[in-house]
Structure formats: structure tokens, C-alpha cells
Image (spheres, rainbow, N blue to C red):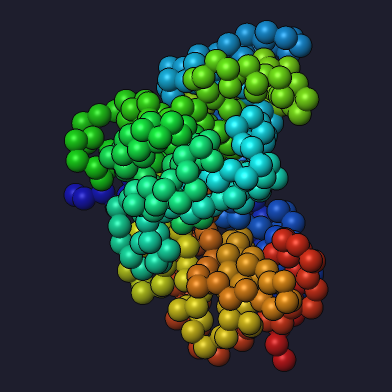
Length: 458
Ligand SMILES: *Cc1c(COP(=O)(O)O)cnc(C)c1O
């Protein structure tokens, strides 16, 4: 008989009870939270799909490693284990631990960027671009056009458009491009992967012009899995082999350990170049700590090192990505509008199509996120007009994409949970007529989506 899904390749040793609430309680909780899921307390949430960042469940092996934390100020044995894991799995010579991904982005941007430089990338990421700009660089998007179309099905929607990249080099001159930042996968495009062929091509163009290639490796294992599934010639290779080849096209990477190294906090900067590493060690003592711990406790480095080996286990990553796919498939079969293809860490609902009777300035995605919570206690996140903010004249930006993000934490929820999420969203979709939008009654001047408050329209 055909299997319904790729079931969990682990069993449960410890459980964390979660809030089972009534409709009446949820009505109060969401009203008190100003109809903003960011303002809900986690104790009011049944299934929390706000983010996959730092929400991972660690394994018994990782917890055992935490008991072997060597909290010496310098030269901790856990640092050597982390360094070895980076060398074994990614192939980079040097590792600088940081408190999380943005700590590594800070170091990389400071040591490589000079005022007036241009940094190409395959779509921006918030913290990555912020550090580039703080150091005087301009970010330029060189991702393929298809990445911006929510309905276009492409196996490697995160690819760099090589013509755009070459045109940028011709326009500003290679001397002003210290490196290209390649995100594998692309978070803001919905967790879309980059093909091995594209990485190789980007590396070739970069080498010719003496431009370095730096990966944002945050979700590199998910990217490796998509290569195995979708790219010719890789079906019989292991995830570890694919990951190693991917990294061979880079000179270094920044890593948010809160995602694909299966820990709750931490990150690192990895580099091959001795001189750049020297500079990074000079800076890390100012911002993070000694080069042998950076921003991390010994026990956290141990958990990260062990998590990195666990993440390249095929059974782990096969289940991880399949679980996202399962949720996407269930919604799609019921006609619910989602962004396609489903990426490695989340399913995105298209709120403009879901509530096509709610105008964008009555916040269809914010409304949908609040309705999903009311229906089932599931927490999601608005990624639309509220997140986009206002322009210099004080008008809303009206982004093309008005989305609700359902982000799946690693190893935390079961298929039964995914069914609850799917069933409640399908019910909402079937009852969508007549649902009214929201009005915003408070907003902060920057990053308003975190704290904005809303009320139902009369
Ligand atoms: C989360 C993330 C970062 C930043 O990492 P933090 O650990 O949150 O500082 C950078 N790039 C991408 C693609 C991310 O998803």
C-alpha cells in the first residue's frame, strides 16, 4: 500500500504540554493581543508556526553533549569539535563562533566591505542587508525574475540570473564588488533552493573577476536535499556529499545555527582565507568574545557540532521537507491558494486570493492570521502590507505579495498537528465569504508588524 506520508524518523522521550484552549478564550486572547499574532503569549498558542528560528527540538545525543560543555575561557574542547564539524561537513578551514547568524554577518560585512561597495545577492534578507548597508555598501538583487512570481513553478527559484550578475559587474566594476552573497535556500522567496549548476556558474564568473563567493548557509541542508531530489546526477549522492560540493563553490559562509544546525541559539562565520580569518579574530573579541567561543557557551558549541552531523542524515531531512510538502499538498488539494512550489521550511498562504473581497488596506493577511488563531489556536505570521511599512510620504507600501507564513519548526510537530492546521485553514477557506478586515489602531514608526494593534471593522 502506498504510504500516506514520510513518518517521523524519531520517537518521543520528553513531552512539552501545549495550550488546549476554547474558542471563547481565544477570542479574548486575540482581542487582548490587538489581533496581532506577534503579541500573543506562547502559553495561549496550541501549534506555534510563527518561525523555524531557534524553535528546533534537540536530540538526546545533543542534550548529552550539553553535559560535556567545557566552559574554559580559552581553547574549549567543544570549540575543536565544532571546528572539526565545519571542516568535515562544509570543508572550510576556519570557524569563528558567534551568538547567532547576524553576529557572523556583522563580522563578514566589517572585514570585507568598504564605503561605496556593491554586494549582489539572490534576494535580500533583512539582517544581511542591514549589515551590508551599515558598512557603506549597496545591496543589488540578482535573483532570477521567476522568484518574484508566487505562482511560477520552478525547481530552483533561488538561482542567480547570471546575465544580471555580469551586467552589474560591467556597470560598477569588479573592484567595487568584494563578494557576492548567495543564500541557500532563499528565505524571503519562500525557502527556494539554488541548483548546484548555478552555484558552480556563479563561482566561475566570480573567480574570473576576483570576486569572492560567500554563502548565507542558514538553510544549506534543505538546499542540499532539493538538489538530491531535483537535479540531474545527484539522486545517488548522500546529503553530506552534496553539501560538501555546494560549499566547494564558496570562499566562506555565515550561519544562523538557529535553523539547519538544529540548535536554539548560535551561529558562526567560516572562512578559507587566512588573512580574512585573522581580521575576523581581531573583530570578534570586540563584539562577541574570544575567537574560540565567540558568542557561545561550550555546551552550546557541542550541541551545534552534534546537530550538524544529525542534520545531514537523509532520514531527518527527508522527513523535514516532506512534512512541509504534506501541509502544502493538503491545502492545495482543497483549493486553498498557496505560493508554489512549497519551499523547505514553510508554507505561504496567498491572502489576496484567500480573502479576495478584502481590500489590501483592510489587511487581508493580518485578518487571516487572526482568523486561523481564532479557529484552532494555530499561530502564523503576516507577511504583507503590515510588514511592508510606509514610504517617506507616510503612505502604505502595497506589496505584490500579501501572505500568511506557516513556518514549521524542526522535529517538533507531528503529522497529526499538520492535519489540524490544514483542516482549520480549509474550514476557514470554505467560510471565507463575509469575513471582514481590520483597522489599525496603533503602529510604531519602524518594523511596525511586531507591535501594531488592530480592531475589527464595524
Ligand atoms: C535567520 C536568518 C539570518 C539571521 O540569523 P539570526 O540567527 O536570526 O541572527 C540570516 N539569514 C537568513 C536567511 C536567515 O533565515
